[in-house]
Image (cartoon, rainbow, N blue to C red; front, top):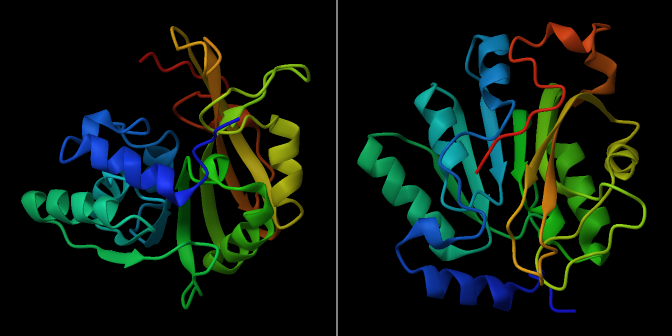
Length: 231
């Protein structure tokens, strides 16, 4: 099966999209779910790391809220888009061209964000990815990840596109250092057969296990225990 994992495929996608970010399969106009909640809950802006930043939608949102943002991607075209959009909006951020599995974090971040990087990665690089994330998340830090969801044990992987993983396996992957705080699902239909006709995206908000307060899921103001955000 041909997956999106190889860097060559990303070059092809960015070459095809050109300057039109809307053509990118992972393009989105709104901040990733939970970001607004984190910004509101923290109150004071902090340091954020956007790994696999793509065209920079989340980086720009956080920078606009006063956060000190570092946008990391291994695709030069992604960083060019992010920088151009930031300049047009009068925002400042730091960009790093690197593969996160080869990058050496030199700082701790209050928020680390992955909008669809892990699920496009070769599985043999998972341990390096995890190690970098754990080094980057501050002791009281938040980690948000979007990952294609395997809804049932027998749901097949698609011929192309990201890897589907169950909620339980995502939780185990980041345990014990990170504990899931909130989870939501976005169902998407009308897709091509090669992708699987329909799919679900899981949104996860993790917190350092040592800093998680005992509180009920109903305390999140947005009420997103199971959210369906239409496309």
